[in-house]
Image (cartoon, rainbow, N blue to C red; front, top):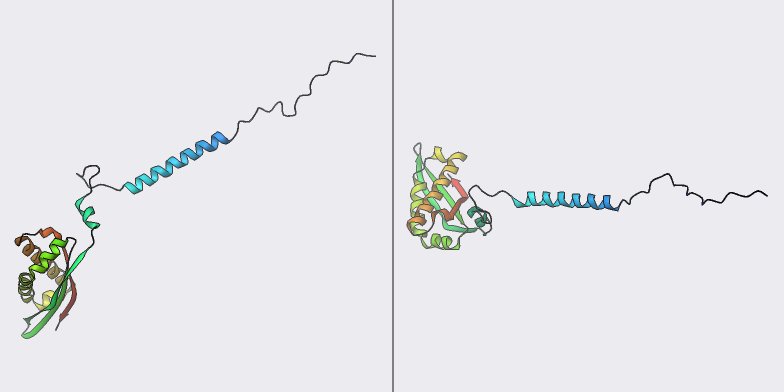
Amino acid sequence: MSEAAPATPAAPANADVPKKKGKLPLIIIAAVVACAAVGGGAFFFMSGKQPEGAKAGEKSEAHAEAKAPAVYVKLDPPFVVNFEAKGLMRFLQITLEIMTRDPATADKIKEHDPIIRNDLLLLFGNQTYEAISTREGKEKLRSEAKDTVAKIIEREGGDAKKVEDLFFTSFVMQ
């Protein structure tokens, strides 16, 4: 008999294919990059811009005031004045409310109601029909009325800046 050649172990079928590394490291790297991108985007959008000159960690005055609830002080009864327009007697009735975010300023407005009413009556009585018959005229009158109230509050020891706005809640001309 013939001698058989020593048997060599059978080579595996995939011997010429290099061993594949697992996909786990690639998945981990992709997840870390995705988390970093999401976190950076969230930080960018949530941080907001600070006003120029503001230090880090300080809130601007306007931002701090925006969080306080608005307080509206209604001046009752409505203002009624008459004025002449082209030979005719005209009447103006205005109901208004003053907005502030400071309770102390609201108290000052209530406390000095007679002075505020007096000065506003004088202001409203000096208007012409032509001036206040347009939207621009009404807005100008509203701005002048707000300034009048702010000056009174400042004159009486309050902070004029705390009188934020004034709104006409009723405006009737005849």
